[in-house]
Amino acid sequence: MILKGRVWKFGDNISTDHIIPGRFYHLRSNLDALKEHVFEDIAPGFNKKVHRGDIIIGGRNFGLGSSREHAPLIIKMAGIDTIIARSFARIFYRNAINVGLAAVISDIDGIEEGDIVEVRLDEGVLIDTTRGIEKKFTPLPSIMMEILRQGGLDPYTRTHGGFKI
Image 1 (cartoon, rainbow, N blue to C red):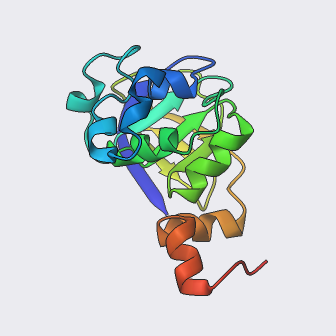
Image 2 (image 1 turned 90 degrees about the vertical axis):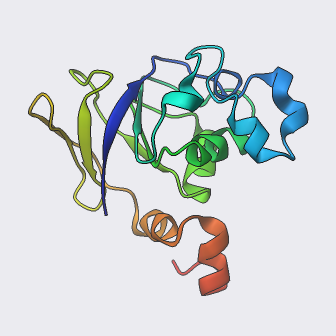
Image 3 (image 1 turned 120 degrees about the vertical axis):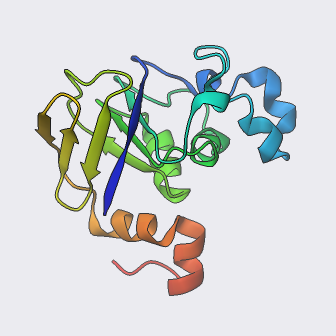
């Protein structure tokens, strides 16, 4: 599984409230309206600038805060298929995989916003094609890769009827 896209870069401790500000919680049953506010407070206009296939680079503790599964879902709906970060908040990490959003833990030094990166999920390789930087990361476990290939936990369980470990 190879994903390639333009980088959007965020720092450390990006919370679920940074992703979807709490004042828009009332829109949680209208996901199309909710996605219009993704990263609104820290990256104004993000929802208008992001393109399908773009990739987010984050620092440490990406996705901390509440356990709202809306946060990774809205990122996915905005067109992002992959987030690469130094570390993730545990619940956000699992919610991301469950909605079909690849969450990769990797060194991100030297990668800048606007760069084009290629993520080879099966191989555990991250390549910044803009700067000629290559980094290795631990590939996701096979069950997580299969959930991503199926498009998330829902389609996976509809196809397989449960987990095969």
